[in-house]
Structure formats: C-alpha cells, structure tokens
Image (cartoon, rainbow, N blue to C red):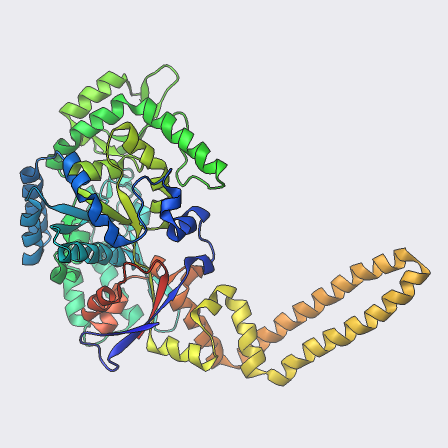
Length: 559
C-alpha cells in the first residue's frame, strides 16, 4: 500500500493505492497469469519478453535497425491528423522528435468507443505516456502513440457508453446510427443527431457538478453530428491528454495505407505460410494447456477487403487456391490480390493477427501496452512476425485500476469489507452483512440448528447402519435434502433481512454497481466522463501519478 499526493484534489490530499494479484481475480486466463508471473519463461511464444519495463531500453537498437518507413511522410500525416484533433503543442513537439532517426515509439490502441468507451482506454493511453517518459529519463528519444482502431467494423462495440446513476444503477447511452452502414469501418461512420441527444441524458444520470458545464461543452465540441467516430474519439482523447503529448493516429488515412502497402503485399504472398504457422502455434499453446485467443482455421486470411462502397469484408482461402470474399461471389488469385495491395492499399485492412506487424512497420515500436486478451493473441501472432522477418515487439499489460470513491470506501469500512471480498459475489456479501451487522441473533439460529440436526442424524445413522445398510444410504440422501432446504431458507432469511434494511440494501447494490459492474472489473464497463464530471480534469493526473510500471497487479485507488 502507498499514498500519492493528488494534484488539485478537493478535500483529502492523497490517494491510497493498494495492489492485488490478478490471480486472485476470477476469470483470468492461465496464459495471461503465467505471462504476468514470469514472461521470460514463455519466450517460445513471446521471443522479446522481459521481466521489468526498464529492460525495454535494450531493444532500441534492434528496433531502429529494422525500421525502414519514411519518417518524414509518417510525421507529416501525424501532424495533419493531430492538428485536426486539436492536439496540444506538446504532441507536436513529440511528432518532431519522432522525425529523428534515433527516436522510438511506445504504442497502445483501442477502438473508437463512444466518449472513449470503458475506463481502460485512458489507462492504456497513460501507460504508454509513462513508459515513454521513463525512456526519455534514461536518455532515449521516445514518444507515446495511440492507435485509434478505426478500421474495425463492429458498430455495436463502439456506439454505447455506460455510467453509474445517482440511484446506484448502471445506465447506458447510445449513439443510434443508420442501420444501412453495417460493415463500414467505424472510422468512416458519421455520427448522427442522436449523439447530441445522448449527451444531455448523461448528466441526468450521473448528476451535475461544478465541472459539468465545461465537460459538456468539450463533449459537444468533439461529438458533433457529421464527424466520424474516430474523429470525435480523437478530439476528446486529445483534450483529456493535452498535458502529456500523446500522439494519435488514425490508420484509415490513405497516405498511411501507402506506407503499409509493402507489408500488405508480403502478407498476401505468404498468407499460406502465415496461416499454417499460426495453426501450428495454436497446437503448441494447447499442448501447454493454454487456449488460443483467436480462432484460426485453414481458410483464415490475414487481411480484410474493402468493397466499392467501403464495406469491410472478410477474405477466406478456398480449396482451389483462390481467395474469396465472404458473402460475395468475388474471388482473387493470390498474385492478383498482392498486385492490388501494392496499387490500391486502401482497399485492404489488417486482421487482428497482422495488425501489430503493420503498426510496427509504420512506427519504430519499442513496446506495446495491451490488455489480457491482447497479451494472449500476441502469443499467436509472434509467428506472423517470424514469417515476415520482423523483430517481435514486447507487450506489457496496461495499468489496471479500480477507483473507490469516498461513499463506497465508507460502505466497505462500515461492513468491514475489502475490495477482494466482492469477488465472492453479491449474495455472499449480503449474507455476511446480514449475519454480522443486521440480524446477528437470528443468523446464529441457523448454524445452531444445523449442528443439532447433524448430531441427531449421526446418531440415527449409527443405529440404521447396524440394522440395514440400505437404510443408512437412504438417510444420506435425505440428509442432503434437509441441509439443502435449510440453506434455501437461510438465503430467504438473508433476502428478507436486507429488504427490511433498505439503506444497507441500497449501499451494497451501489457498491457492486460501481466497483464490480455486471460482475466485471470497473474499468471494463464504466466511462471516464462520470469521473471527470465529479472530480474535474485533474482526475487524469491522478491516474498518471498512480502508475507504477513495475507493479503487475490490479490496483485500487481509494479517494
């Protein structure tokens, strides 16, 4: 546990930071946990793995030696894009640094979610910023880069944002787009008037504060109808991270496509080898007891095809050697596709297995910050790096936080709970609160009754066993039913006791809604807007100040 001083924090002058091992959090994959525990033990899957983040400085020369993209063209594009996003002067200083032949990039990225999507989007961005700052402190020219995944085409994943209501419930707002745009990359989907209508209800849900007016103005400026999802996302993220110099990149830009054309072409020509290698890697992972993150079958193809309307469609290898467009009669010879990629690269976008390689072709990437799922699929796509003769990028887990606000801290303290206790589930926590604080005397009746019943049944069992073993077996069955019915009665007792104490009931519900919404970590559901609304733009600084790149756990930030 440690304390950090908070810049401009109203009230208390510090935040309590406590770390929790991911192995104690339900639902984590074995591969992810093993990678956090000892990444170098998995070097057969992660060739560039290191134990500590400060070791990444040793990769700089290898990255620079393998890098061949025209920095001037790249940085011209970045200047244009970040100017359109309204980026700060510090961002443009970093872009100029990237023009230097000795500069490297720390990358991260995420889909262009509505109002930035879940909290972990900000955590990713600031993880990259902190790593770049650390490298600069060590004398290495490094810049943080955020890859806006504008090529993805799942509109459902980016068109909602979730908040905790003032009454302790989860509320979701929606940018309800045109249904005819299905299949378009989100970076080409324009926001409708519905986005304007969605902003007002946010503040009805989360409440209004001294920061609301400025925040609402910021949202309305970024999320104007007619802007694309990625344009709006970039503007809002640029605003929140203005002090940190984060460079944003939208890969749908045609000039970037031309810079990536060589990788597209090579991946097409070697697609059969890429797929075979990934399938073999999947077998290796399964042999070690791990489940591959991405399903790759024999007909897999590493790129998507964009038709004449701009719709992003999957490609599949066919038994006759051609590559077909899913949902279409169109098909191509491999050589035909490769020639098209060289001449019209904007007709293609990389799939999840190829995207990191494309990122690292465009940028001199020294490391990447991702989530648990990304760490898992890097074990697969390290084979793509090998086939295309590229140095494999080191991946680190992004910083991971749960923000415990004062009212929820008070609930935890009142009922002597810890954040970890919540993983036992809402019913278990309710039962504990009832038995320890709300109805202690009545709660003691159940274990006393169970003990007496078991004592009497044990005596009966002894007599019946000597008389007839089948009677003893029958008793065992009935004993289980008796214990089950007592347990069911106890659950009803807990529920009734909680209902009679409405304040406790609401406090427990609100606790789970904020700290473990929908049974998942807070960072995976809730949106940053409600925290900026309550605590102001300084909330971003609190997160940055809480980052510890050598801490591989999940941390609670108690305000």
